[in-house]
Length: 139
Length: 475
Image (cartoon, rainbow over all chains, first blue to last red; front, side, top):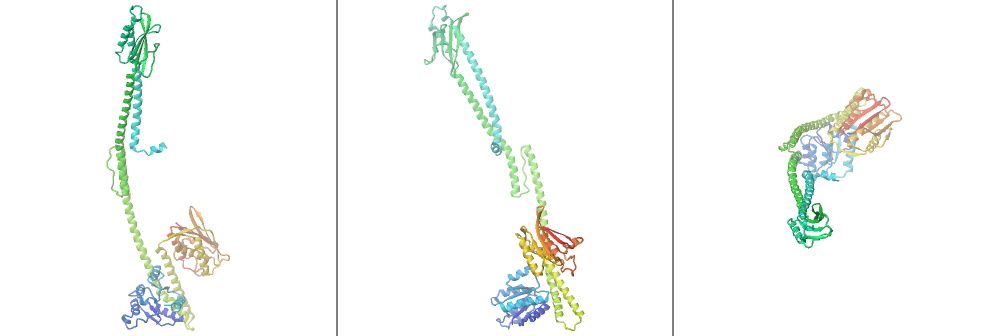
């Protein structure tokens, strides 16, 4: 398992998966639809109680606006756990709001990406981001 | 110097000087006049008395010198002279014959010297009179009498002491009067000052000066209290107004915050479906089977184009609303540098060929991020509208006008029709078609908001085909 996508919008998830596939990042991807599910997954609890704790994704693509537990809360939980210290978290959101950006970095985000309306551009952004975090970056 | 020293004199000292000065002058003047007059009179009467006495004695012993007196007795004469001593002021007396010989004499002290010839002398300590000794019309000798001035001198001294004592009494009186009067004058002044101090320092606006004794001061107090009342009322009105303004300001800020939050959530929520529309139409175009009708393809292209356009509109609207959401952070920086970097970035992005003529610009005191947005829009407009021109040129300079720096951004592009000037700075208002020049019409609206937030003004001039010039000032 390489990538965890946390996003509640089906179309956004589909577009992200498409972009990953089309740019040749044929990784194994797991999708969580809300913050709670993402945390359960990462901490092997609830529905994912049987999953070994050591089994972690290499990269998390996290939306800000999520049902139940929002993206910032998820991020803070991740950063509050020593086992997940080196887990790269890239925010993938449609908000260009300065305060959202600052809050994300303050809470420990590794990168902040705005989902482009232009699919070609979105694809290019996903490709560059994926290549860096999965290829170049050491975690 | 003296004048400056007088300016700083207290009321008490001024009053003392005013009372004591003239009084002392009068005492000295009157005292001196009385003294001189009295002494002259006294001295005159002394002389007169001395002459009278001497005449009586001369008459008593007239026969001693005449041949009619067979005795010619100097001793008898001496006794007569001795009688003169009854007057304590007589120091000595002598009887001289006609031929100048001393016939008989009397001296209170043996040290006293009788002059060889009788003459009238005036000294500080004594004076002498000489009277003829006559029988009928014939003179037989002279009587010389010397009077002491001891009593007279004592009188002079006691008189001077009296004047001095009067002066001293006056001094004490003047000091007491000055003290009393200054208390009367400065007391009310201090009361007023104390009230004013309490009023301003402790901000106790209910303070009023208490009633004062002297009518003029009381008048002043009434006027003063009236003024305080006026201030109290104005202050109350001001505080009320300030409170109202603060309330309104709070309401406005809340409304503004809500509006901003609304704009953001709307734009976020709008963008998500829009992204799906734009992206899937793009995917449909890319992956459409080759046998899809050209019409379907055209529809998909139109959908995709409009979705992109709408995304651009949302981005612009967000950028526009962000200008008001931010706190203004003013500091001094170089506009020249800003213009140069913005220009370089725009040229790189657009691949434009226009030439920039940048004059020396004074440093500006403004919010750098906002000013950058303004210059990005002004300069990108200049680049865009000079695109059809051969020798595209953009000028940026500044000049002083009525004590204000006016910045100018001029181009030789296509310009605009001044008839539509009122629409120039409107949100999403355009003076060119999309086919001529791309854009959403937010750029100049952003420029105007940025300048307005700095308390400045922006305006423009143009002639179709000859370029446009934009001016702005900052407050």
